[in-house]
Image 1 (cartoon, one colour):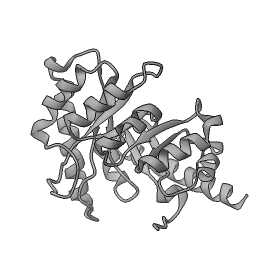
Image 2 (cartoon, rainbow, N blue to C red; image 1 turned 90 degrees about the vertical axis):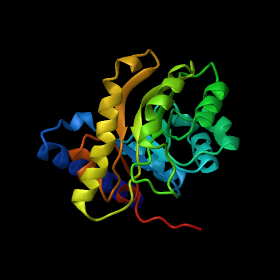
Image 3 (spheres, one colour; image 1 turned 90 degrees about the horizontal axis):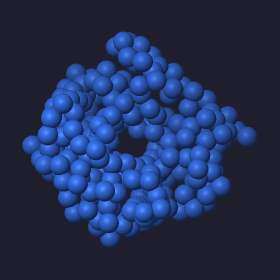
Length: 240
């Protein structure tokens, strides 16, 4: 019962932070979706968050995520599962068969495999292209200059639906830098969204996946439509 109270209280606090950040820049709270990042936390915590009203959950590790989806099969029609971590070619089949969204498409090969392996019995897989805004060598994501080309390629894939862009900027406590990084992704998103050559059936650009616990306010100020929050909901992570 204590865990339920803690997660419920944390969830309410995060939702209040989202509302406050949205109001501060004249945005509607309803335009911003919360993705609860449940990586490293047990399925029982996901169930508690669901019971507190949360429906969308993000996982970074394929096998861990697939295991939780199976464990919570009784809630499958109620939950929305997002894969948000780096994705290797040998893991695409599990993701294509189990998840509803993938935020971390960073190359054509991954998109093609997800398309080919998505079961016809399931709805199209919602995908976001991960953009390497900060230009970090160690960070996944396509260069800003490559976004349009990858969008056009994904638009030809019948089992995928391109929903938007995602980024994980270089961590900083400087709010001005946080906002500058998020604005860069918003500007790319706006350019792609308004490009007449990308007004295609399989492109439904409505999602900017940016902002985590440390930079959520800056992300919302710069147009985020989906913030990815983990520790502020579930608590501090313990990595084995």
